[in-house]
Each structure stands twice: as structure tokens, then as C-alpha cells.
Amino acid sequence: MKLSRTLSAALAAAAFLTATSVTARADDGWIVKTSTASVEQTADRLVAAVEKAGATVFARVDHAAGARRLDAELAGMTLVMFGNPKIGTPILQAAPRTGLDLPNRVLIWDDQGETRIGYLDPAELKQRYDVEGADQAFDTMAGALGKLTDAASQ
Image (cartoon, rainbow, N blue to C red):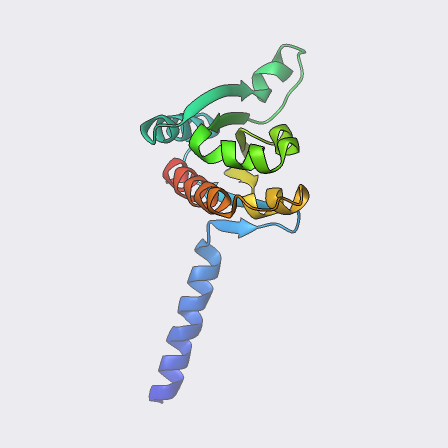
């Protein structure tokens, strides 16, 4: 009886964790999280977190606003581009072609009523350009992106 309760509790806990998981790594190298706020609020939170961390926001692109200019509908979708030269420069020195994907870009979008926030996993970026070296910069980038998007999504 006691084992049955323990097993039931463990299964319930596993189901809860699975159902409430907010981070997923997609097969295409993206890390996607679910935000508790709207697209605009999540983008505002991300920009604030980036600036508080001492990085630079280079652009904020409202794709839905662009679609409205064409009298077309598009669910909320905002791209935030930001970076920190202390992190990005060693990567660019090791593989200049990474400049196509740097500074970092984070996409925030409405996915059928749920706000998602996603970005390319830095490990995928390293693999895409077959970067030799700059391991510490990639590790720092991964940590920073994780923390910044966590701050934006809660």
C-alpha cells in the first residue's frame, strides 16, 4: 500500500513537471520557452533584462506592425537583437561568418494564444560554423541567453 502511494505520488510529480515545463530544445537547434506575459510585455522584459545586464539592444522589430502596414494580419511577433562585445568578439574572431547570426536574436511570438520566446542554441551556432575555440564565449553566451530569456518569460 505504501509503495503504491509512493509510486502514485512519483508519477503525479512527473506528470506535473512535464505539463509545466517551460523550456524545450527543438530538433532544429532552437531553445523555446513559454512566457507568462503577452508578446509585448515579454519583449519589454527582455529589453530591460538585457540593458540591466550591461549588454546593448541593437534592434526591436515588431513583425506584426509591419504586417498591419500591408493590411495583413499576423499574430504578435517581435524580434529583439542584442549583444555584448565581450562575449561576441572572441566568436567573431574565431569564425567571422558567425557575424550572420550575431548579435543574438530572440524571437517572441504568439503561438495560438500562448507566448513563446525562442533563440538558437549557441551550441548549434558553434556547430553550424564549425567554430574552433571560443568555447568560454559560447558557454557564457548560453548562460546569458538562458538567464535573460528566463527573466523575460516569468
